Length: 297
Length: 297
Image: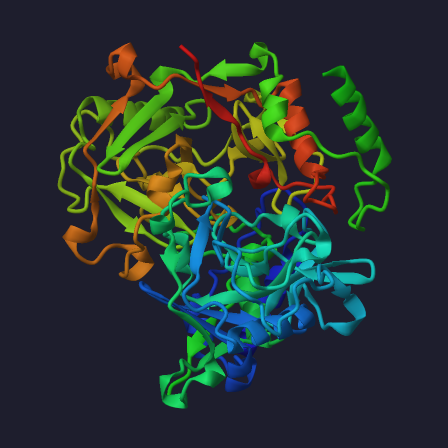
């Protein structure tokens, strides 16, 4: 990896961060697959089964990693709801193109049981509490980067998760504290960054986002389905820890504070291969892949 | 509209462009629908039927506006191909999640007839040739804004179209001049800005993008379909001018150099209503809606 490091360092030093197209000859970037293949095991972290949700749809399984470091109260409430089997038999109620797929109780009647009906908003966190790997490139909205495996941003003393493709949030009514995790959404289009700091993000889809992104769009206002039969039923939602180990999908995520991840970022910023001729020289937070792989048993 | 202008001006002056969350009380933004409803007719332009493509799929019609100002040679070649009925009976060959849907000749056998097999790349244009309405916010990659109704960017003396959701480009092989418009793609995920300046964008989908974004994802490499029967057939592709006027869908687009559009942009930057509490204070080029409406006959 030292050779790669040297090359990347040369690239970083050789190119200005200005907006003009780079004119300096840039070496070809290493393919992502090759970079990951040669990465040390210590650059990966096991996705904690206690933070892993399986949402089973007729079309397959959506796997979500919760982010309790960013939304501890919401994570706890979701835990309570899942243990009560709250989501089983509910439905995907909304699919708005280039925006979100959303699920919950279409009739708004199911009892929340021991879960809280309202929660204090967890739109932002104290930045000092969280590690942050900043991207070198300017972000339109704040300072962007990664924290504990998730795309994040910060400004002043606050940090927050960012609405990239596949991120999962807790729908709410008009009052900031009206979200409780019983109604969730996943981003299925261009990162709607205007939502940042306005709603609590609780995690991200690490497998199966295509089961949500390909859903027929709802034809009602905001992409809600107009007829009950258009909704996709949710068979069940379980934590990985609720399934016998043999039935779990063990996953690892590349650590966003690892050297390999830094190479992934640089490979995107200066992407150049047989097809790419003009490296962007920059990358926005939602264009950086967050690699996840199955653990070989 | 003068009152709105005054309010927006106050908003612009009252907030810094820095990354810190704004703390000044911002008036509620006007809903987009209301803004468009009250806009003068002169702020709209008819989408030229001579630049309008109808791609008919079994699920419905995708309407594409070509951008000959940015890709004149590609537009001309596509015109030749469509008049020869080149696309009729071909197929959507690829759908890669959070990336592109792509169509063309799966067997690479159909004769291009009078169309050119290779074209000089049209990745960028001379900036001086094109009007440009710059966004006030910083962009990760360049200076971003709008030109002739399309999302665009510029740096130094060059300008180019930007890979926002719904944009349509001409696939190519490794050589920059290998694209010819016979293989096209549409963006169906987060704006892959790394593609900017690496491939020729030829227009954008103005109606029916959901017919492409909901396609089942291909399971082969790069999202290509592995079996012929998985592909979606293209019934026909026609220019609007090839159809009798009664069968056309007459569309108008909000002019991106209009006062109303400036209000649309400011409404997004400082979005604040009963639901949004924390205006972003910024907007990236691919988060600005480009309104299109049907012309009342």
